[in-house]
Image 1: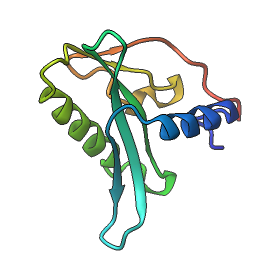
Image 2: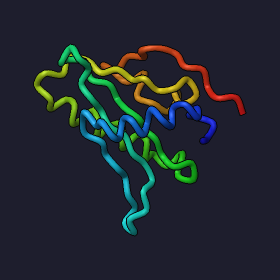
Image 3: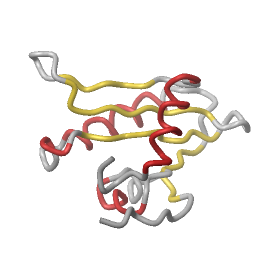
Image 4: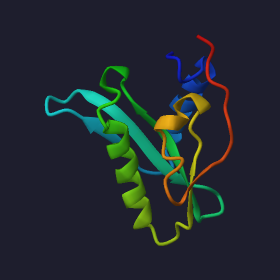
Length: 116
């Protein structure tokens, strides 16, 4: 695992993919290389939406791909009639690159980054 996610989060990610409760987007290059992914899912209240597991491959950081992925997810959420708020559960280490700080997106907690 990298410096942004813990080993325990790997199992959570696999479980998320197995149980997928909302859209999950994958960014590919023209040649089919996967360079990023991320999804969103409604919480049990039916009106709060969590941004889920957004990530970009390390070799493609600082190219704006995370922004593209986040903006697309927010665009799709905006079209969801029941959506009233968006939450970002990004780990603390990725917070500067996440959706938090954008209008209408709130930080729901702080997670400690992985030790190096």
